[in-house]
Amino acid sequence: MGAPFRIYNTLSRTIEPFEPLVAGEVGLYVCGMTVYDDIHMGHARAMVVFDTFVRYLRHRGWKVHFVRNFTDVDDKIIDRASARGEEPLALAQRYIDRFHEDTDALGLMRADDEPRVSQCIDDILALTQALVDRGHAYVSQGSVWFSVRSDDGYGKLSGQNIDELKSADTAAGKRDPADFALWKAAKAGEPSWPSPWGPGRPGWHIECSAMSRKHLGHTFDIHGGGLDLVFPHHENEVAQSECGNGAPFARYWMHNGMLTMASGQKMGKSLGNVFNVRNALGQFPAEALRLYYAQSLYRSALPWGESALPDALAMLGRLYDARETAEAMGGNEDADRVARDLGDDARQVLELGRGFADRFHDALDTDFNTARAVGELMTLARAVNRFAAHKKARKRGGPVVAPALAAFDLAAAAIGLMTMSTADFHAEVKAKRLAALGMTPDGVEAQLAERAAARAAKDWARSDALREALEERGIMVMDTPEGARWRIRLSTAAEDPA
Image: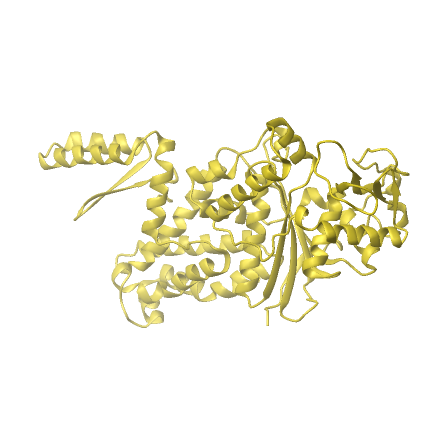
C-alpha cells in the first residue's frame, strides 16, 4: 500500500490529499513531446519532474502506471519536414529516437506506455465519433469541430471565459470562434487517414484524450504537463473527454512551472532562447541537471542563466564530498557516547541523520516539495563537514555519521541523487568540465609532473607557482602520501570546495 501524500490540484487550486481510484495504485498521464526537434532544458523540466515523481511514488510503495505520449502528427512537424524535404513521420521517428537517446543519457526511466498519434488513429476516430453522436461536435467541409458552448463546464480548469476566446484553428467551417478542430480535412502533401468524414488527420487536443482513455480508462488519477498547457490544451482535453465519455476525466492536475530567462520569458524554440539537453549533457553530469530542477518546487518558475548548471554542479559536489568525508570516518563505539564526547557538532549531525527520513518524506509527501528535500540534504552535508573538522572525528566519528550515510542512500533510492561513487562523480566532472576550462587531462597531468619534479628538486617557489597557476584555472591540487591528486573546483566559495 502506498504511503499517503498530498498534491496541489490545478483543478481545485488547493493542496489536496491524494485518494486513488484503486487502492495502492496511481494512473498517471503526462503530455509528452511534439517531436520536430531535440529536447531543450525547458522541455526537460517536465521530463525530470515527472520521472522523479514516479520514482518517489514507487519508493513509497505505490504501483504507478506511467503513460507519456509522442505527438508525431502536427503542423510543426509537417512544416519542418517540408522545409527539409523529408516525410513527416520519418522526421518524427528520427526525433523520437533522439529523444530516447537524450532521456536515457539523463538517467530517466522510460514511461510504461509511450503512445503516439500515428498509431492511435482508430482510438481518435472512435472518440471523435462519440462526440458527434452526443451532439458535442459537428462536421463541416470534411473537418470535425468541437462545439465549446455545448459543454456547460468549459473553463473549469483554466478559468477562461468562452465569450473572450478564439481558438488557433482557423480553417473554414467552424460555427463559433472558440470551437476547435477534432479532425482536420486533408490538405495536399500532408499525412492523412480515412475517416467517416473524409480523409484527414487529428487535431492537436483530441490525441491525448484518446490515448489516455486507451491506456488508463475514462477516468484516471493524475494528469501532468507544463503550466503552459493548462489552456488551451488541457482545458480542451477535459471538455472533449468528459463530453465524449460521459464520465469525469483526470481527478488531479499536476503542472510544472516554466524555465524563465532574465527577461521573464519562458524558454521556447519559437523564442530562440533554447539550450538543448544534448549540449548540457556534454558539459555536466546528468545528476547536476536533476539537482537543478529539484532545487525548486516543481510548480514554481525556475530561473535559467549561465550560472544555473555550474551552481547546481557545485551543490552536487558538496553532497558527494560530504558523503566521502563521512565514509572515511572510523570507529565502532556507541554513537550517543561518541556524540557526547565530541561535542555539539557531533550531536547535531547524529540528530539530523536520525531524523532525516521523516523530514525528507514529509517534504515530498507535501506537494512533492523537492526544494525542501534538497534543503534537508544540504543541511545534513554542512553538518557532516562541520563535524569533520573535529580532530577526533576521522578516528571515532563513524557511528555518528552512519545515519547521515543512510540518509544519502535514501536520496539516491527515492529521487535519483547521489547514485554514483564519489570517485566516479569526480571522474565524470573531469571528463565533461575540463573542456569548458580550455584544458585537457594530459595537460593537467603534464603540469603536475613538472610540479613533482620541482618538489623533488626542492624548488618550492616553482612548485607553488605551478600549483597557483592550476588553481587559477579551476584545478584543485591535493598532496597526499601517494602523490598529488586533482579535481575540478566546483565552487568559488571558500567554505564549499568540491
